Each structure stands twice: as C-alpha cells, then as structure tokens.
Length: 150
Image (cartoon, rainbow, N blue to C red):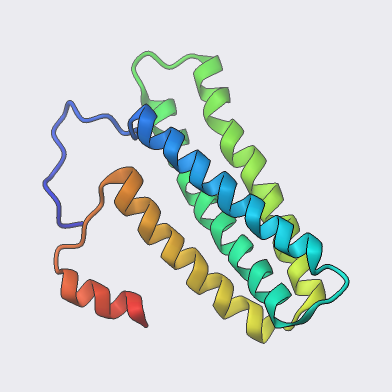
C-alpha cells in the first residue's frame, strides 16, 4: 500500500508469533461477543443487534485473513497435498460460522441496521488485521484516516 516493496525473500505468511497473537485476540473477541449474545438471546434489543453485527464483522475479517493462506500454499515450491489441505482448514471453519452468525442476525434484527454496522465492523477489523498481521501501512495516512473515519 505504501510501505516498502517486498523483496523476493519475504514470506507471504505472517510470523508464527503474530499469527498466535491474532488467533488469541480473535478468539477472545468472538468468545466475548458470543457470551453477550447468549445472555441477550431472549431479550433482543439494540445491544443484541450490535453484538450480532460486531461478531459478524470480526468473522468477516477472519474469513479474509484465512483465505490469504490458500494462494501461497498452492504456489509454494515445496507444496504437498497435506500443506494445501491444511491451508483450507481456517476458511473451512470460519466461513460457515460467519454465514450462521449473519443468517441468525438477519432473522432477528432489521437488515437496514445490521448491514451497515456489520460492514463498518468488518472494515475496521480488516484495517487492524492488515496493519498488525501483514504490516500493511497507508501511503498517505491523513487521507486514509479520513476515509476510514467515514
């Protein structure tokens, strides 16, 4: 985006420590939001709708991050059937869960509320994931901040 161009020796995968931290943060966020949804399942209301939308946004971002493992696994010179199959596991787990959460939310709350909140939560999670996990930085931070704040 604006950071230094990658050299030929750069790994397409984030470091193992960053990936462990990412998985921990996503698991904690999803766990907290799931607890909120469980507590509010019979109550409903705005807080329930916000938790539903935020959980769908986090899972959407997780789908994007999970799908980034497939391409490098397919094009790796030492790729095996096992390494390719293992690269499919994160998206195979994340995508159906994401669809379930979205469908549950759409059945319980107004689409006109959920859709923009889910999109905003997904965008913010994508920005954070790109920055922390893949070291993506904007070329013009002030313009980027203005666009991100919309």
